[in-house]
Amino acid sequence: MGGWRKTPFFSDLTYKTQHLLKMTDLINNLSKRPTFLLNGGCHFAATSCYSCLFLYRYIGYMEAGNLTGILEFILLGFSEDPELQPFIFGLFLCMFLVTVLGNLLIILAICSDPHLHTPMYFFLSNLSLVDICFSTTIVPKMLVNIHTENKAISYMDCLTQVYFSMFFPILDTLLLTVMAYDRFVAICHPLHYTVIMSPRLCGLLVFATWFVGIMTSLLHISLMRHLSFCRDLEIPHFFCELTQILKLACSDTFLNSTLIYFMTGVLGVFPLVGILFSYSQIASSIRKMSSSGGKQKAFSTCGSHLSVVSLFYGTGVGVYFTSAVTHSPQKVSVASVMYTVVTPMLNPFIYSLRNKDVKGALGSLLSRVTSCL
Image (tube, rainbow, N blue to C red):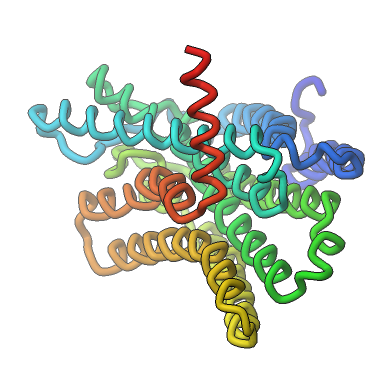
């Protein structure tokens, strides 16, 4: 690949995108194999690694063209009270460990149980992988800052956090929409389910979510290259969040703000409309069922997903209204904890407690682990 060519951004991005599009051939080949669903989200590690390499090279390109010569930002975090730092450190360390362990157990349970090698659990394993990555993007850096009592974050690391703090929520939104479509097909068209939700389609759907997330996040950070920043580089947050970064800019941010609102509408509202439409059709089909057992099974398969959707969108809307009605950075930071840390932590509990299949697979996995010790 060599170094970045001295070309305008969009031609350069097109050049790199051509390499990313070649991944579709890999997805098509993998989707023809019967073992495609056995690996959960693991085979998408190649796509994520490629995107990380792409991001690293591009942010390095941005850093070289940094107009203001900024080397670092300051993350103020939740509180400057030194007595609260041990409590905050311990709390977030525990939540991070629970998040990683819980979602990792979900992925391992799905991979190890042949009964869970279905499209619904394939999407769930990808959702768990995204939740692990999302928390890993934010929490470890905050813990390091608290432990070292150094709140500085480099320009490059900050842009990387901005990228992934947009990338993974986009994946969450699209994966939840895909999961709603899967439930719609399973309940409303059960006889055609295996034909419609083929391994090929499942692979392409997940690849599409990754591709949209990568391109959208790159578009956001590409617009940041032309921003100039003032001398006040203190971010009143515990991570580099895009809107907070834009508030520090001295140059015009109209285009950046317009893109944020537009993408929020396209990737936030439209998927929610799709989810609501899917469940309206599901509710209509359930009412037509004569068997009480069939109704109960349909509710049990949809209940976990509906709970996760409600938690995800509820916390997102809560953060939006909190930032709109209050001017307190601390309150906005606390509200942001709900969707950046709490939601990824609770998702494994929701799926394991409300889903008998996942609960049984987790029990079998843990029993095999304990028997080997």
